[in-house]
Length: 238
Image (cartoon, rainbow, N blue to C red):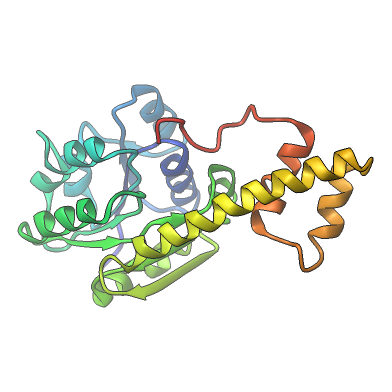
């Protein structure tokens, strides 16, 4: 069956997923409560939907990238929500970072309507998503994963099946712990280089080629060295 894909939530991460899918020639529907985000999606060749229910009805795979518990509840179970358009051919790739009990509530609610849900959070920043330098930690029914693996590979550097539903989120929490530590250590390294009279960009290149390397040194280090923070990597409320 040809895959008809949807993206629910066209913010920093979701808009990158949608752009890659459109560029890959996928028939891509999308929805966001932000009208400007929806307009940008349509201008790039996506099919703007009136609500999540329309996305579900038009697609057999939907990727959700939502910022909060309130947004999840509204998008899935509110008026015109994804659940009201669910069908037994639908696989939802829930890629948000949220409490595990919320993900489980979504899984149970959608299963009652015949749709499968994967807990598949993403490790990577907005800038990484733009260049497909992200990793999916997908957990849930293996058969559902097998149906979407190739599709997710179109928008990510790494796509892994990690086990039963919920393992993906647990791994993402661990990844976020390490990202926090590596961000802090990168900032300390940049400051130390500056105080030592060393060009911090040169430090990042040299140290990043040895045992002191980390992805955050590579991704965030140049931003810190330049003192440039104009391009948002995520929204503050998230």
